[in-house]
Image (tube, rainbow, N blue to C red):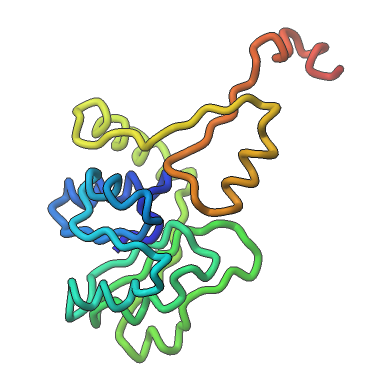
Length: 187
């Protein structure tokens, strides 16, 4: 189960899991159901209906092997209830202080591991090279990318904070605004 399947991380996670032969379920908003299916999700779940746990259990009665939570912020706090004994919940770290996490005591009772994940410098080169190779070979594709101008940064932040961005938003910096010398950068 990929929580946040239409986002940048979720878009890659669906494709990587499907390419590895996994059956994939993904949560997303109603306008992205077809998008996540097209990426390889067998089951696309509209999280706004509030029935994620029920839909996952109907699809995988014994629970899923793995939950990758790319959203965090307590959006899938009951993720451990969707995982089979021996399974794993992997929240992608967001660096938000005091972010709600699945209950470790309940996870232990259910025989489920909760392993927060974040890329680190030591693994970064290998991970990025692997993604580039998969992109170049056509095994996966980049998520939807929307380019906004730097002056639209506040709007981009509002949209990201709202939690309903498909793929990634990139801010374009006008080349004429870029410093050409170190002295220009200090001005």
